[in-house]
Image (cartoon, rainbow, N blue to C red; front, side):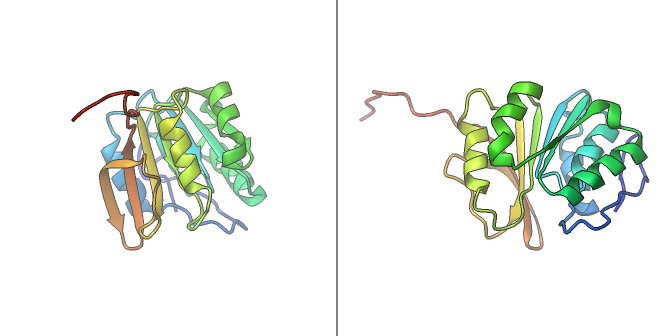
Length: 188
């Protein structure tokens, strides 16, 4: 696994000892091709960051800031090593913790974000609640939210993908915020 574009292109990323499912080069290539006009200067949030490959790619391609949220010790160690090896640490913040528990604090301390990438372990029961919080909370609404999930995993009703791309058993869902229905509207 390596950085595939930008200033750190070609740097090999480490995942030593981490029992993680890193985002493949093909998925990262598709993701960043679709976000190429948004990433330069962006504030990027990498939730369930694993080795940090997605946030590192954003930094390498010109993001102003990347915040990595990861709970596993092995993942946190890999992120820190990869930031040092890519020489991108000065524009990064690493937050240890469980995403549902730290999301509001991360947003308050480091947000708002232009892009949020959500990549929980497949089958994580917290995924629908995290996505709903990002989409429905006025204080958390980001311009672009991308969720990497298993094809068979459902997203909450508030998640309306405006674009999807499938890679075998993995899907990228690009989401837009849906405004709640106006209270008291009588359309007959």
